[in-house]
Length: 257
Ligand SMILES: [Zn+2]
Image (cartoon, rainbow, N blue to C red):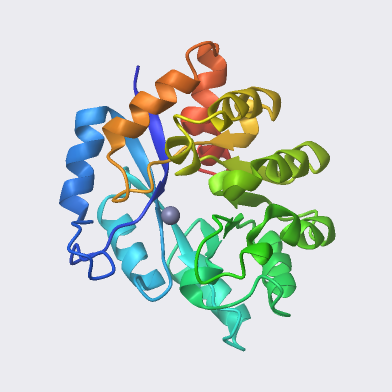
């Protein structure tokens, strides 16, 4: 069965991934999509690696293949203009806030107005909530962003990486608030051979498949590996439930249905 959408991908026009010698070119991605049977992918801008214009150019070059999420920098006092440009000039479909790569805290005073503005423009906001260096790790847990979720009922929030090992916080937020969605990217492969994998299967079902998505985090993972792990997690799911997790959730959120 075809996988409609890989919900979480990073690429650059020149194929360079943080200078690590890893190829993250469009060509390599398209090859993997083809081999694994993915129809579309969500390209997520990373601060200090992509500009929103770059992600926009790639999306425009392959309009049937890609959906784009841009960055907004809370340290930029003109962040309102940045959001307007993201939507109306670059035609991107969502906002990614990446504190670690963008070097800002999720407690920054401009995060709330960014989330409010995003809701007005019907742009979902994804927070990277994978806890990692340079921290502070305590600010990267899903409950840190609960205040924004509560104050912005018009905005849809995506909990990136479902909060890593704090996935139960993400799950509880999803149960409590109708505007919360879970992105299981990276966490699903990182915890594949641990007891958390059973928790992930439970959550994919109980959180409601309409609120869940999975991606590869390309070039961190091969799409074929993520497809194999997804198959393992979704083996007892109905065709309808799988269709949501494998693409409909993110397509609906970004008005691409
Ligand atoms: Zn990522």
